[in-house]
Amino acid sequence: MIASIEQNEGMIRLFVFGGVLALMLLLETLFPRKERTQNRAKHIANNLGIVVFYTLVMRVVFPIAAMGTAVFAASKGWGILNLLDFPIWAHIVISAILLDMAVYWQHVASHKFPMIWSFHKMHHADRDIDATTGIRFHPVEIILSMLYKMVIVLILGPHVIGVFLFEVLLNGSAMFNHANIRLPLWLDKTVRILFVTPDMHRVHHSVIVCETNSNYGFNLSIWDKIFGSYIDQPKEGHDGMTIGLPEYQTDEPSNILWCLKLPFTK
Image (cartoon, rainbow, N blue to C red; front, side):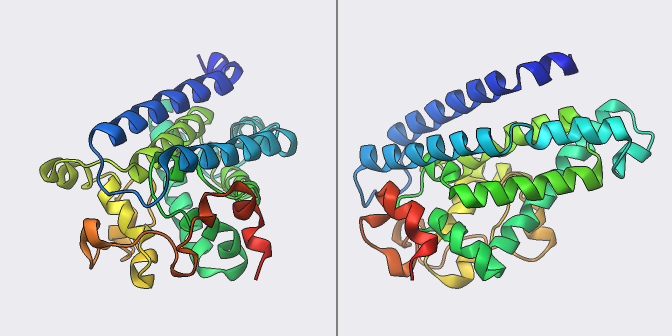
């Protein structure tokens, strides 16, 4: 089974990616949460164009990536988890949870360190947060993120299936919690006990600084609650809040060339 997943990793991830994205776009059409400020088709095309661009870059720069690093670490017996005698199911679950926490701290760092923020702010400049915003990142940030995950994998020694599940969940949950969909209040409260919901993460995309620096989680909601970065609701309410960054309230964030040049402009 493990060998089969390794051999078909790309196809499985592409299938899940396409399925989740299509479902989120449909739900956004049927149950929109916020009124848009820009043309939807142009916005989606721009963000998917960025995804295609950094995917091609990653195929060249990191042909092995996180799963390959996990296989390598296991073959050498490297990493904390590879030194412990856990049942496979426990190894997989613990791996996915610890990797999720590692990404939480990576996200915090991307807001605290100016050099990383210069690339991450392209993600935040998006004025119409939706499912495609969850996969809209600067190629340099994607490269830095992969380097970080590879180092974490070498330190932790997570199970290769745990890494695979984490990567799939991270990608899918990012599209879900960025989606412009209206969940019933009772459902939102129930889901966010453990997982990040669209309303919870939308607070993170507010132009208000204290709200931007909150709700960093991508999948599990517990890290924000444990580490004190959780805000329940935006000050202006979801209908009244302004999305994006104060200095970029124009149509430029929906231009792919502008997005790619943003970190290098004053």
